[in-house]
Structure formats: C-alpha cells, structure tokens
Length: 248
Length: 252
Image 1 (cartoon, chains in turn red, blue):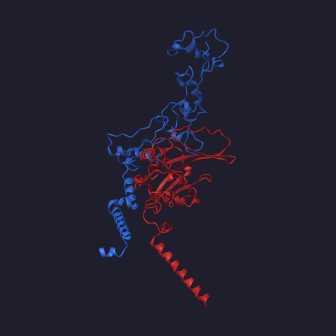
Image 2 (spheres, chains in turn brown, orange):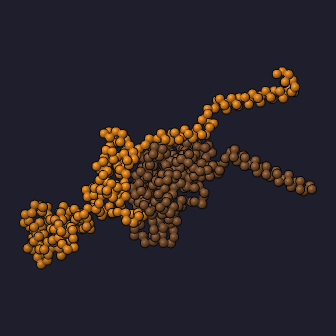
Image 3 (cartoon, chains in turn yellow, blue):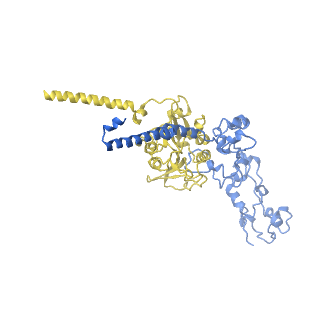
C-alpha cells in the first residue's frame, strides 16, 4: 500500500516538474528555441562559385575601399586563398595578395590541381563569436548579419579566437574586433556588397535567402551546395558551389 | 516609526537603517543615475545598427552609370565584358555620380592593370582568356589593340610581333631594333589572313644588306651602320650565313 502511494506521489511530482520546466522555457525562450522559429522578412545569404573565381583580388581591393579596412595585407574582411593539391595528396593553401606576382607553378609536374577559393565571414546562423563575447558587443541582426558594436567592444580578441573561419581581425586604429558585415550600409539600401558588385566573373552572389526568385535562390537551386566546416554546427550562410573536398 | 524600532534591539535597528539606505541608493543609481542605453543591450545593438547603416557608400552600383554613359553601356552589354560592373575597372564612383564634373573616376591605362585578370595563372579556371604579359606585345598598352568596353582578339594582328614574338623580342635588344620588319620583309595583306599559304618576302641577295652596310651606302637609315667593302668581305657567301639579321653581332 505504501509502495503504491509513494509511486503515485513521485509520478505526479515528475509530471508537475516537467510542466514547470516547460513553463519556464516558454517564459524565457532560449537561443536554441528561437532558432527553430520560422524566419520572416530578410534573411541574407551569400554564394560563392569556386570554379568561376580567377583570383584577381578585385574583391579585396573593393572591400578595403568601401569599408576603410587598413591597406596592409594582413587586415582583410574578405580574402582569396590559392589551393595547390599535389599528386601525393598534399595540399598547400596560401592567401593571395593583390598585385603580387603569382609563383611560377605551370611547369611543376607534381601539381595535380590548383584553384582559388574566396573567403569571408560566414555570417553563421549559430555564431560562435556571438556566444563568446563577454560584453555583448557582437550580435546578430534580425536579417541574419553578425555585426560588431564598436562602442562596447573591449578588444579582448575572444571572438577572433572563437571564429573557426578566421574571419575576424583586430582593427589597428580602433583596437576593436572587425569583420565582414555583408556591407550592411549598402544592403540596407538595396545595393549589393562591394565585393559582389566588382566581381568580374560573378563568382560572388548575394541575396535574401527567403526571396522566392533571385540570383541567390537560383544559385542555391542550380548548384550542389556545400558550406565550410559543416560539422561545427555553426550553420554558415555563405554557400559554396563546386567546392573541392580539400577546402576547409 | 519610533515604536517600530523599539521592537528591535539597537544594533539590529541600526543595521536595518544602513542596509535600507544602501538599497535605496542602489535603486536610485540603477534606475536614475545609470542611463538606459548602458543597461539595455537591445538599445546598444539598435545604435550599432544605426551607425553601421550610416557608413558612407563608395561604390555607386552597376545601374547608376547607364543614366549618363548610355552609349558605352550599350556597347559593353553585347561584348565579353557584359557582366562586368563599370566600377570593377574604374574604381568607386559614388562621388562621381553625385558631382560628375568635380570628381572623375580612374581610367586604368597601365599595362599592369588588365593582367590582374588576364595574366596566365595555372590556378585560373580553364577557358578564361589569359596571356603572358611578358611575351604578349611588350610595352604596348592593352587598349591600343583591344577596346576594353568591347574586348575581342583583333581579327588581323596589326603587329608582326603578335605572332612572331620571339623574333620581335630578339630584335628588340639588337642593333636592328630601329628597323621595322617591313624594311627587309614585304608582307602581303593576305599573309595576315592565311599566314602559311602566303608568305612574306625575304632578302635574296647580299646586295640587299649592302644597301646599308656597303662601303658607299646611300641609304639614309644607314648613317651609323657599320660599313664593309662588299668586294672583299665574304664574297663567296650570303650575309645571313654568318650574321643573324635579327640580332647582328657587335664584333668589330
């Protein structure tokens, strides 16, 4: 008799506590829950056709012009990497510098293939940089762009460490973290980001992922799409077409 | 009030007074002294977004140029460069679109500019038009043969060096650098269309070289040319058996 009574008591206690937890979750929706809600309005994404990139570095130049990025090659919001895969399976990666003479590799018979990969901030839907910022200076806007609040950033570099794509750098003048904003001032006026604007081969595509018909949705529909480091669950919004398996 | 405190022992009453004063000050500081943007991160973010949106735009965008430069736009849209934005080559032009007379965009004419895209690089996708900037018509600006708004390979090369680059490069560092190819070769127009069936002429006799290098040469070009006596110097041979005309040696 005692056993049955204590069992029922325990049973109802579990029911009640479960309900309480759910109630609390409803009162304070966590980030995890918020992510699953349907997205309305703009939700910006970016496309890169790796097989179209000619490595001319016009995008890097335009980005520096548009966003006051320091001219030194070390500080970049977007950059282009040259991949060289050799016949023994070894891959070397080097970011190109504008105006720099390409190393002579045409006669190198050990090279299996080589190509350019444009890189930029992936504007993750689940951004690690936002999670680690101790002062809430980096945040995600409603349209899915991760921005840095220069006024409150304390320059601790934690986000630079946390970014798995190496997309952030510390601005040498303001001493705050800086990164690609998808040219937020341009896209909020309906213009394209500067790098997309100047890309001579349309290797870079930009648009609203929620739009039914746009170059971006067409790009996603017509290509096999990959993202960088999908296993990290960062949910990047920069999508790559014709991406080589070697690219990280 | 006094009655209320009498119910507590004296030290406790003092403690209550101190603590409540601290709480009151804390509340005052939090609700009155600290400005709202410091407390509310949403306000900080909205501020940051506002600041981000207010940044100056430098690149005007591809639709803007057409309004004034319709002719070039129409020409460009049929050519290979149809997908190129004007600002890819001419640089940021927002300032120019606002004040066209005062600010002029850059017109890149340097020979180093076009090879940024068109220099041969084995990492570039196959089929993209590429040249070797060292060998391809050296020192000539790209726009002298290609119109950048409607680029195509010139149908007939204007220069012999477009095909005979190696000879042109050899000649460029030789004593014959001043001589046009046509001084010694006559190239019929048909040679440019079907180069193998119609060939340019070549000098046939040693007297041809003698026109400049003979002892009593009258040719104006030959004022400074080294002179020899045609009667004594290698009379059994034609000149090009010993001297290579595209790079005649300097031996005295």
